[in-house]
Each structure stands twice: as C-alpha cells, then as structure tokens.
Length: 353
Ligand SMILES: Cc1cc2nc3c(=O)[nH]c(=O)nc-3n(C[C@H](O)[C@H](O)[C@H](O)COP(=O)(O)O)c2cc1C
View 1 (spheres, protein in one colour):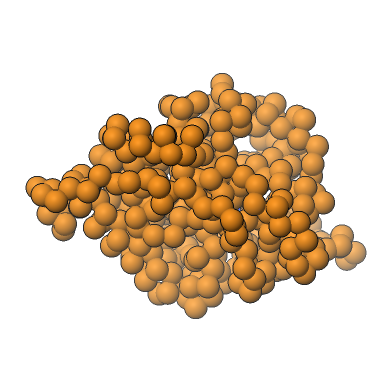
View 2 (tube, rainbow, N blue to C red):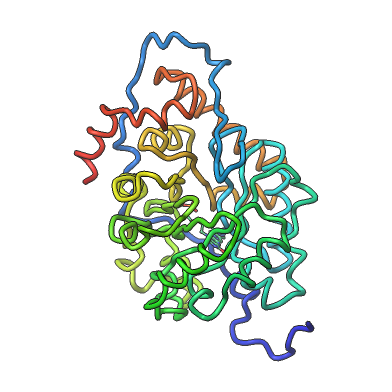
C-alpha cells in the first residue's frame, strides 16, 4: 500500500529521527534518581573455588538459549538512520550470542515503505529477536492479526508490548488506557508466540504487576528508572528543553522494580533494564532474580560506528560480568539468578523498599 502523501505532523519517522538526535545529543539520563542497583551488595567471596575461565554466562530467555544473559534493548527502526542502527545491532547480537529487541513496529505496519529498516534476520539468523508494539496500538484496535504480522514480517521469536503512560502523556500521545489490561490479556490469549511487556525507562512496579496477574506473560522487562528518562527525551523533542524536570524524574527504580515484580509475579521471568551500564549492574540484577538484563541507549553511539564497536562494548560488559560472578563464588549466571541469595535479597529489600 503506498504511503499517503500528506503525513501527520510530526511524521512517525520524523519523530523517531528526533528521538535519536535527542538521545545522542542531550543529557537524557535521570538527574536525581538512580537505579538503586548500586545499593545491592554482591557477596564477595575471597576463595571462590572456581576458575574464571569456566564461568558460564549462558542462559535461556523466552525459550531461546543465549550465550550471555543480555539483550540489546528496543530502540529503533523506521527511517534511514534507524536501519543502519538496527543492522549494526543485529550483526553484533549474532556475533555476541545475545538477544535483540527491535524498536516499535507501529511505523512499519502503518508505513510499509519503512519495513526494510526492521529486517535483520539475514544478519542475525540465530538471535533471540523480539518484536515491539505499544499498549496504545492494542487499545486503538490492533489485535492478533497486526501482532502476528509484526512478528512474522521480521521473523521474530516473541513480541514485547511497551507500557509508557508517562512518555505518552508528555508527548501528547495515547493517554486513554482504560482498556489496556483487557486488550493485553486478549492478545496474549489469541497468539501462539510468547508475549512480554516492558516499560520504557520509568519502571514496572508493584501496582502494575498486580494488574498483570492472570495474564500468561512470557517475561516482564521492568525497564526501571535510573537510566534514560523518556519524559526528558520527549520534553527535548517537544520544547527543545526540559520545562518540567520533576516529571522527568518519576518512576520505579530498576532494583525496586525487580523486587516488586518478583514478589507479585514470582513465576514470570524478569528482565532487568533501565540504567544497566556495567557488568556489575547485570550481576546485581541477576542477584535480585532477573533472568537477563537489557541495555538500550549506551549502544546507540557504537551502533552508528558499526557492528565492531557494538561487539566491543558488549564484550567489555560481559568480561566484567564474568569477573563479578567469579568473585561472588558462583559458577554460572543461572546460579546467581536461582539463588536469589537470601543475604543479598534481604539486605536490598531493607534498603530499597
Ligand atoms: C533511541 C531510543 C529509542 C527507543 N525506542 C523504543 C521503542 O520503540 N519501543 C520500546 O519499547 N522502547 C524504546 N526505547 C526504550 C528502551 O528500550 C529502554 O527501555 C529505555 O531506554 C531504558 O533503558 P536504557 O537506560 O538502557 O536506555 C527506546 C530507547 C532509546 C534510547
């Protein structure tokens, strides 16, 4: 279907372009809040009884085996720069054996000419690939057909639905979320592939987790506060500056989000994201029960340089993670997740709850 000649203002691709420009050029980190992961003390073990080279980072996420508990977070697609970024990220994900989450595919379904920018399977045949749509699209009428198209057109293994009320409110977007839960539940029932939910950096906490009870979600990416603030990004996009800084600081910090979602939905695998910047962050998130972590904005700049720069960034993080696990006395990433070691969890609960 040809694209209409008279696009809405701003065009979806224009908006995505502005998101990239702002994320690359402005200070869009939370200014006063942190992830809380810095308060999670990994129990240091001075005589671990293991060998660094033997530390096993592999894990299973959404039914797929990964070489390490890491996904590249959902970012982009839809225009020329997005295509370049997605192709760098996909090639790096394949080389590193980590997962890759595409950015929102709404633009791809509504403007078919943008499809090629999401097509990365040729570069990433073995990667856990996650498609992406927003809760706003489900409320607006997207159902199993559109979700299936999003997954099948790119050859994804699973679909993430992003929940982003603060971003939408600041942007002036979809803010009637009354039917959100029902539409999400109906979608999960109707499709054969795994569906996960994610925030975009303001966090999924206790109240949201309670709302999600009873829905057969394959995972929850908490996407907590402490990294990229989308309420900051949208203010830069709209006004060229941050006029409501307090709004941009709202959210559930990543560590707290992991604990609260784990308490409410202990059987749903958790992915840690929002401000994950180091291998130690990943280790701390695993110790709070996360199955894996995801990193978004830090990979933008390397992605523009090319796949080698993304691979270097990821491998440095994984080297650091391996050392963190070694000196924590566990032999594998899964062991740390499984243990949810009482000492760590208790100390952290006391500090962040
Ligand atoms: C440039 C950019 C575009 C993004 N686009 C999407 C998107 O389309 N869909 C989505 O679910 N999240 C999107 N996100 C949010 C990220 O997936 C992530 O949840 C958030 O940035 C917090 O992680 P970080 O602190 O590692 O950046 C985007 C992030 C960035 C930096």
